[in-house]
Amino acid sequence: TGVAPTDVPLDDKETMSIFSSTKALGVTPEQIHSEVGTYGIPEYGTKFARGMLLDTHPTTFDELIRISGLSHGTDVWLGNAQSLIEQGIVTLQQAICCRDDIMIYLIKKGLPPNDSFKIMESVRKGKVAKGKEPKWEQYKELMKEHDVPEWYIKSCEKIKYMFPKAHAAAYVTNAFRIAWFKVHEPKAYYTAYFTIRADEFDSDIMCHGKEKVLNKMKEIDLAGNSATTKDKNMYAILELVLEMYERGINFLPMDLYKSHSTKFIAEEDGIRPPLNSIPGLGTVAAESIVKA
Image (cartoon, rainbow, N blue to C red; front, top):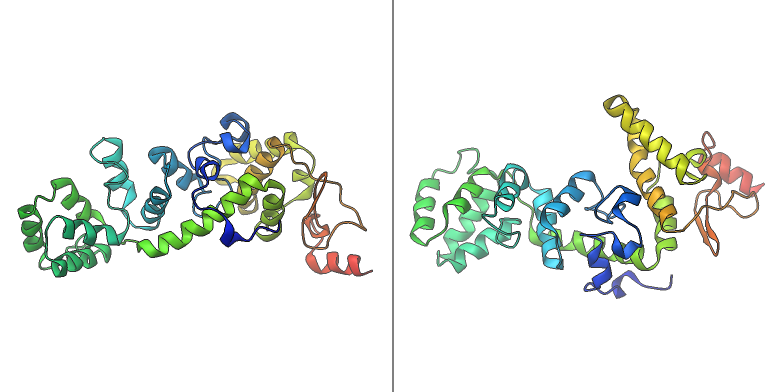
């Protein structure tokens, strides 16, 4: 595209909007079977992550970092922050999301920095949840003396592992840059995704219009847990192929002289699949055909 990922603006409103809506992609939730437009975005493409987005409706980069922290922690979201947010006890901004949040919050409440750090370390390692922090009762009293609310203390007692905020920020920066290309350079985005990530791409199903894609998705849905591992892995790619079709981008026919052996190619009229996307034809065979 000629656009360097590092030049992508991290405050782009259209890109930010796909984490809470499908509007910027030019499709409706009914068309792509999702309320948000994050299929194929690292960290936010899975069903679990999309559910978190629906629960939290993020509108800022900081909130995306918080969600990343929640999704990578253990017992930080499910049965903890999720319930507190649903009950209206806290907002996403107030919930414990990354390990750093604990130390910074406690220092702001007036606790000594050294104690704030030690509490954070005990919580994020799961020592408190496992009952292996001998000073916990002492720390609880210290927190109560500084008006730390009961919900906060109970939330700390459930956590078994917490993600560092810097790590979450790095993940989100990368995800947001990819999302920008999905919004503003869709053909390039889908071409890159299918080339790099789509190991289960099947041209017989995916390159012949959205009806065939929808039928395969329905078949996998009906099979449920009895669906094959291949079909389960294919489902995420089918979701993205359906979205691509709904955005008006099509696959071009495979061509012995125009198709690459292993890479999808973006052309003016659509995306041309590689020869190795033909079922049963491996990469080695595809490369041999192109060379011949």
